[in-house]
Figure 1: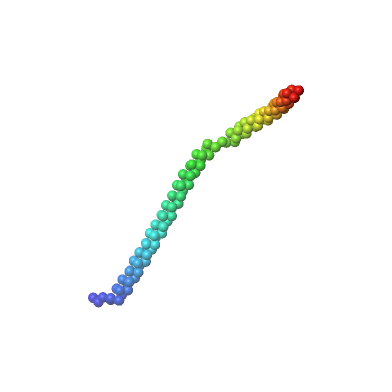
Figure 2: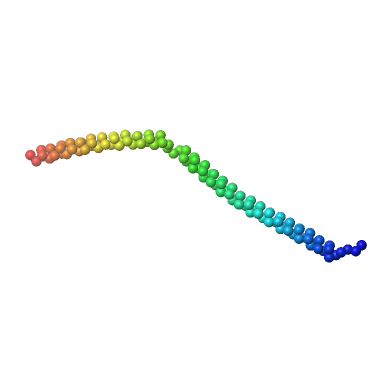
Length: 111
């Protein structure tokens, strides 16, 4: 039996090339998978942070006054403003009366 070494060598080189190509593709896929996994992990961390922040915001917003509360506060402020207007009028009348009394007392002292 006569072996054809160049033919065997050729087929061995072809198999070797396929194995190297398969290893290259396998390595490339593994590296891409690792890169994708790392990117997904970074996104997961960011989403977790944003979820925590959103939860804090929702908790804070829950305690803010709504439209009805603001309307009630507005009405109370209007009542206070009206009362202060009345007090201002009464104080100006009081100041006028005190001025008249003061002037009268000064006039009495001069006589």
